[in-house]
Length: 325
Image 1 (tube, rainbow, N blue to C red):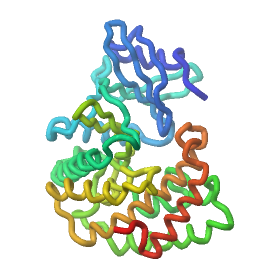
Image 2: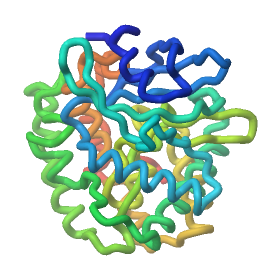
Image 3: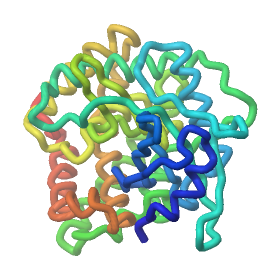
């Protein structure tokens, strides 16, 4: 059910800045995000967390990394705002008695890039951002109690993963299921071979797709760390091309991403070879997500043909011809 202003009113009362303000829904994917316009003319973004997805401890951990990135790097990321009690993560009871978790962020100016944007230049920036995040993650002393989810074969490909079961996604049928099963088994094998060495596996953004970027002139802001967790570093490229894996520019985007990434954090041959496996792993996670989030506009937009498109990509990947690069 969509949340209305009366539903949001108890949340707005938790921050002095937003009391008496108005809120409107601007995004519903994993969570619901509202733009809050305040009486003094300032704007904020209010994130209402989907119940059961992230725990309070996990959200606090996300915010700890976000604050550390703001302190230690030049990447433009959102500033979480403390409530009247001094805490970043707030809890309130909705009109129906449901307990909600919410975080308020400052408002960042910019627009989501499109496929008509300068994607090659943008992916160079994303490669720079990803390498900076990964370098930070490998040296940052995480606070006690830090906890985030792990994105591995088990949490993405198994039936009980947090984004659902790809086997139940719309469009998965007797025709494409065999090739998707082969892909599933191959990914398990290749990811196990690649391994979890700290040089290739650690804390990442995990959702650096176009929908989580804001472009304003030369400034590219990176938002929505809600899916950040422990995964292979090269997965951040795969997430960046989410829903657009068949776009003809992808090979050029990969080159641009790698060029800027390796200027900060060099990769070895196994790392570079892993990128295609990460693309297919991400694609399978999106297939599962579409099935378990059918009520969202994003899932409805991409659902038609997505399973068949994933099977086509799987065939090319298994033949070693995912991209002609």
